[in-house]
Length: 277
Image 1: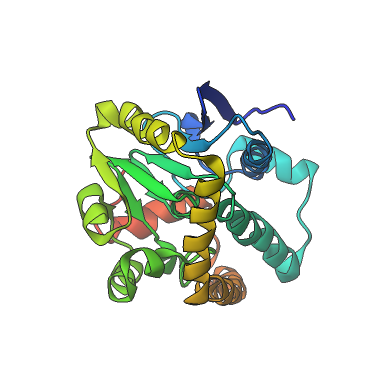
Image 2: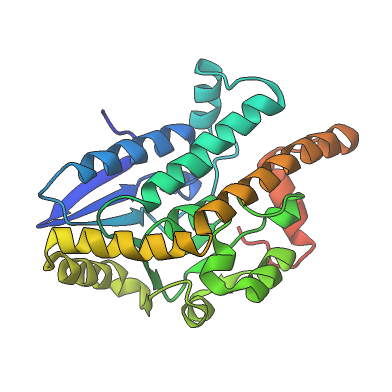
């Protein structure tokens, strides 16, 4: 597969997959998600890869779902999504639930290298990784309630920060800065922006010293413990709740008039005093 939206680089036993769409703050188009999935699944079968770093080019890790870049719009015209609520459900499930569970179960350690914005779809991608190293200017947010939905499609935030704090950040849509994210357990380490890549690679190389099968078993055990606590079933149930909101938001847009995603975001967030360019 030829990649247009991601870059691959190797440093010994560590593979770095970099989402390379800085012009749209690494928004996640369908093509980008397909390329990322292909690269990650290829790495699963490559015995020379022991650890994968997931990064974003430019100033931001990811501003979330692609709401209408030229690439995304052209792709939708070339490969139309199925119509109606069933089509929206199928697209959302494949791109945001099935994909993410597969990435979470990837048999090797993964580390998200996060700087700048990590919003909604970006949060999904980061929390699918085993570890998160954040720069001191990283900012996390799930703003779906501000959009009229309950949470993102892969609702991992309560498992990451605890249920009470998750309610606070979902209800308000407020930012979680890097320091608060570390305190809550959302990220493993916070490092200066200028040393983010270096520090993430140091951690990855340290993990890569371990025996691959032991790492695989360790990851499986911890994920299985989480699943025994209800993680996988809760994530699936939460997706169904999110899917219900699709019909609600379409009805609302029909009654109130739909705006394009960029204008809606600016209008919505301006009311909270925290819209950033």
